Image 1 (tube, one colour):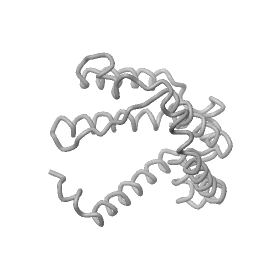
Image 2: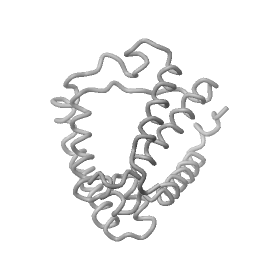
Image 3: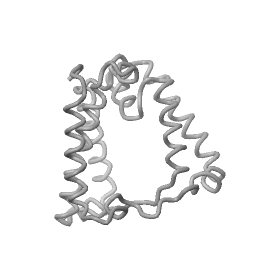
Image 4: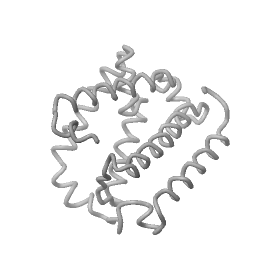
Length: 185
């Protein structure tokens, strides 16, 4: 169904830009491009970010698995490891704590004209990416392969159909949303 998008580079870029602008719009409207909301999340006084992200995961999970079931897309998973999760989590966490934005929210904040996001975020992302790229061969051979996971997906790990996992995860996420204190949303 979507074969024409795989062969047309310009069309892929257009859709990527369109979806990116849509994501930024949704992040801004959800309030998660606000430094105060993000700091409130880090201080556990405002759960807007968690609510928006859980909602996005639920919608994405349903959409991706529906498209997979209809044969519109293919999964392209990659093996993970404890080492890659630790490195990724540390880099993400350090950047998030220092700047008060994650990569998605920093792009939305730049889009709404926040100079701290532009200077600190964009410059930080570029410098961090350059440092990681420089050290990637060493990190890849010595850290990213530590504790390689035996399978690539949760349904493979627990040996049940993926739709059952999707339904269980959606129910768990809805339960978490119901238990969060009511603040920003």
